[in-house]
Image (cartoon, rainbow, N blue to C red):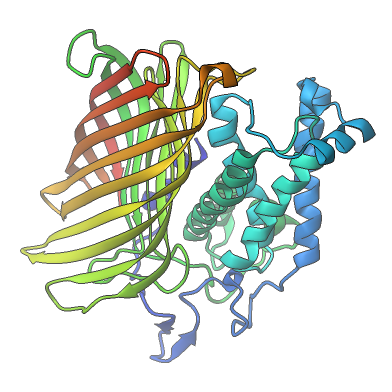
Amino acid sequence: MFLALSLYLAAAVPDREFTLSPYAKDPGGGAIANSGLSPRDGDSSSSEGAVKKRPWIAALETFSINIGVWAVDRYILNRDYARIGWTAWKNNFKNGWIWCPDTFGTSMIGHPYHGSQTFNAARSLGMNFWESVPYSVAGYVMWGYFMENDQPSKNDLIMTGLSGASLGEVEYRLSSQVLDDTATGGERAWREILAFVINPIRGFNRLIYGDSTRVSSTNRETHEPLQGTASVGGSLISGTGGFSGMKFSPGVDYDLTYGVGSSEIHSQKPFDLFFLNGEVRYGQKQVFFSVSTYGLLWGKELGSSDRCKSVIGLFQNYDYFNSETIHVGSMSFSGGLVSLFPLGGDFELTTSVQLGFVPLGGVKNPYVLVKDRDYSYDWGGMGKAEAWLRHPKIGTLAVRCGRFQLYTINGAAPTEGDEGHDYWTYIKADYTLPLAKNLGLSVGYGWYDLHQEFNGHPPVVAKLSRVGAALDVTF
């Protein structure tokens, strides 16, 4: 939900000229050094308003976050795994690492969100992206050995440490997009509150260090090009993959591209360029939450011209899809090509092609039952192709498709065998028609297919289709 709420910032941030270089012009025609970069990126050349690196405070906050989550689990939720002591710690070190038996939601979205907060404990205290990753990794190592009586988990180390870092950087960038150190009064209040919702640990640090109320003559937060929609509406959902048996499901959808402007693609540091989309829906008396994001870790601009601007590079992906019939989560790395084509007549086409490796995925499987776990752990390959055709008056057409081909690492109990395959395919298309400034009406269609084969069992096929309409806030 925090991701969906964050997209309201597009309409809330006043219109302004976004700069794509690390230097912006001041009213007198001079250059304001690094005004396009956040001082929290760890850039030592920033002076006024820069945040001093506080690695030991960040370590203390990482420790405190883990203690706080454990205390809730132990004394409020009364979870058995939170009953720890010398015996549990000894067994954790003695018995080593396992595949976690937690529920699908806990492993695939709960742990990454936890990791995003320990990552931001460092990110919001002066460290850059790479300097902050060890905090999310070390945060899980502490948790796995000391905060529960289950043994530390291989999958949780990846999802908490690495997926947590990618989600954390997205949270950091979106909160920077909202914040404005020059704002005062009511505008300053709602900006700080919304940034807190998006990135709680950063909001906490801004409070205790006085950043939330300190007014500066220039805004030193990163405001990169931002395009997308936040939609409120409903969909007709069918578990057959067709149009039969459809049921209504209200929800919120979001689709965002960050770092792609009207004439440039900005890519200097990790996640200067990223893509984010997902949904929060209600159906069958439960909430379904999905999110897909991938950001540039390292890139290189290809030959740039008036007809095409492209960046090729290495991307980190995080995907979580939770629906009535299909449940898939994964962390992957991909080689990708992102291109921007000014087509003339105010038309603009953005494309993204990704092909990569999935070191860890999770797919619900009816043949897997290990404690609270009803899904297999997988590895494999993935591919994505996405395109956005935009026109300020005609609207935006977004099309995306993906294919994940996964192979079981750890599935059912040993007596059932672990060999298996999961093939997940999706196609989505949405069109948004502008109605007024920052408002639009969208219609969309999605088709999802999961084919599973597991050793010694009949194949399982799960399908989902959706047709929807929504009122959009566009930016």
